[in-house]
Length: 403
Image (cartoon, rainbow, N blue to C red; front, top):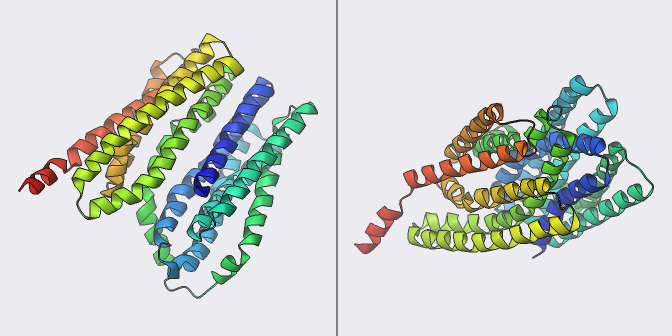
């Protein structure tokens, strides 16, 4: 229960800040906020795929938790700092803003570090602490943003600076409250850091590559087309993508629950049971998606905007989420069979077709970015299905059971 509260609060922090900025900041400032937050998120993508996911696997056995925690926390700092430095320099070349550079570096370092720490709390069975910390982080950020708005602050740097300060404070709080576990991790390592690094890379390289492709086809679009597409279109599309992302919270929660179960069933070759779970997944996910899409559409219409153009963008992106969510099961199956490369190929081809589509679609259209994101989701899902049916062994297992 606490784990889901933590995940929901962390997702709400991302969705809520974008919703607030899009609603209350002037368009020009909102665009700058969106570009910087999107750029900073690249560091988080790499850390999640390359460090956090392998960390969860290697620290399953209690005797290795401290060892891998110590290694992972250092690697998170190194990777996030390195990537944030590169992102900061990239942005400085384009904009020559020292303030932006400092914010990008800080967000790019602190966000993945906080994400690692809150997930590491699951491993040491402190989910309640993770839920409490992330909830307070979300609440305090919301209060601070409203205070800034009431005082007529429109500059995006103040809002991003508040987020940086709170992330730093809550990181310190988690480290302080778990100092016994952190200090006990400073032990003699059973294996060399080179071996650990190779193991992490072996597990995370294709997942990282897949997530980079997905990031480029979503967050990367706002950065690349930031000076080409109309500011209003960027703000509306980013807002609608965040709102549609509420559906992704459901799919992420299901993924966290299903993946261990599917691994166990695959090991014992219970393919028929996997097939039953797949059918149930489709049915439940479709029902939940329709309910959430309806609530989001009417909620947006009532509370945010009645503009038909904005509603079209929301509808397109609300279709995108169920598509990539429903057919995630195929990617789950490919992952438990260790076909991570094929998951990457699906994402890479989808990215290539998205890039090609950007040359053919009208950049002056308000739906331009939304259509690109939808195309990416459709193409990626098609290839998930293709590789799933090409590599499935449902028929074989059924025949064996009949015999």
